[in-house]
Length: 118
Figure: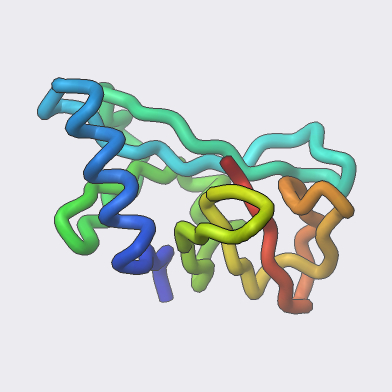
């Protein structure tokens, strides 16, 4: 089971990449320490593909994920949602035991949950 990207998220990433006017950019998805629940999600555009990166091609978008982040994101889904509160990328991560109130960080475990990043 790998990291999945919804059609809505892929369309938003493609639109953002077109604004950057650089065909070498890919979306790097990562997990880092420091969130109020222990870990937080991050997104950035990156030209550099590291030797240890996993490259996930989905719906015309290339995702780069480092090995540590991939362990925490296996089976997760990245979506892009619009609501009355605004627009954001949402990560639904089955590996998250809990998420914090801001929704941008999580504690790993065997529970379910979602967190917003963006």
